[in-house]
Amino acid sequence: MQSDQIYFLITCIAMVLFMTPGLAFFYGGLVRASSVVSMMMMSFGALALVSILWIAYGYAMAFSGEGSATYFGFDGILGIDTSSIFLNQFLDERMSFDLVFAAFQGTFAVITVALISGAIADRARFGSWMVFAGVWATLVYFPIAGWVFNFTLDDSGAIVDGGWLVKDVGLLDFAGGTVVEVGSGAAALAVALVLGKRFGFRKGMYAPHNVPLTLIGAGILWFGWFAFNAGSELAADGIASLAFLNTLVAPAAAMLSWAAFERITSGKPTAVGIASGAIAGAVAITPSCAFLDPIWAIVLGLVVGVVCAWAIELKFALGFDDSLDVVGIHLVGGIVGTMFIGTFGRGVGLFFGHSADQLIAQGIGVLAVGLYSFVMAYLIALAIEKTIGFRVQSVDEEAGIDPIQHGQLGYHAEDPRWKV
Figure (tube, rainbow, N blue to C red):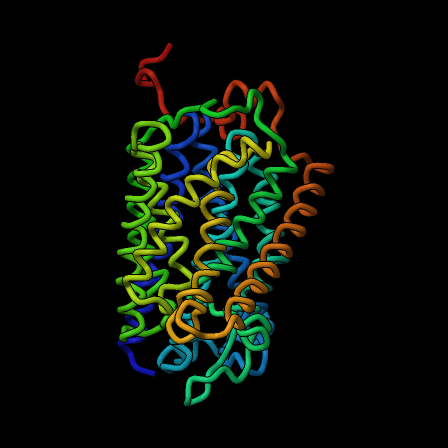
């Protein structure tokens, strides 16, 4: 194990962790001014809680088993002999890699949970959200991360052990199209259904209160996504370079196609649409970034920009209130990107004359993760709603939940020091 591999991962960890504050900005700009603190707090709350749970036991749940060859074992950090950590063990390169790998995977867990919060903007209690975040991470994310991310290769590159979706089904998912995108999108749909629609739910009911904040958030997310995808190779090599390049061109293409869709359907391309297109393209390329030639990554971006722009309109036709379009962007984009491998993936794609086996494997992966995440999220959210309550009171929702939930406002009309 080379030190430069550890340095590479440490850089990627910092970049991917930065994505969660970026998500807070992206979501925060999209909600009402009276809900911006609540919206951003859900991302930062997930960052704090899931980070601790991941190191306490989540990493051990996801990466246990004989094939994982990780340092911590099933009991996690809290269950091992902690004296062995501090007796010059950090000088051991094998352990150093295990530590940074655990941290890298932890940043994935954090952003996945935080993504769900966009579906319940303007109407969720912060304490109840934190309960949901902890339980969903434990019962859903940690297991499905093991289904997909936990595998080992032999010297020839063949999978010799690992999670059942990769080892037994043959799913290809380089950086988390199923685990992160489909998992969070399916959970977002479930909690949106449990909490119900916002009062006065209709198209255009609330305009984004701060478009520049959303654009800043989108830029930070895209910046971190380079490490999210390229870093999943765990080394700065040719595959990481391909993933990096595809993470540039797919979001760029999706921005263009989303803007064109808006121009055709509503007469004007919007800044929020451009930002949403970038995120949709990044979502779609996440599972496929190492399996597509760049030209097909561009095609994927062009396709997913239109598909996701159209998909977010479905919530009005189908009658569910996904406040910030987590379902339309992350669930739909994750499905498109994952299935695209079975059609246009190098060496496996149906378009290139290969069998439909890979396409079927991709479909099984999407269904397994999506259905499990949806059902579990629905049950968890329903249990919270029926016990401690998940949705704020109607009067608080209509007035804006920041003062009630957090005792703060995102903006003050005047300097509070001069307020009588």
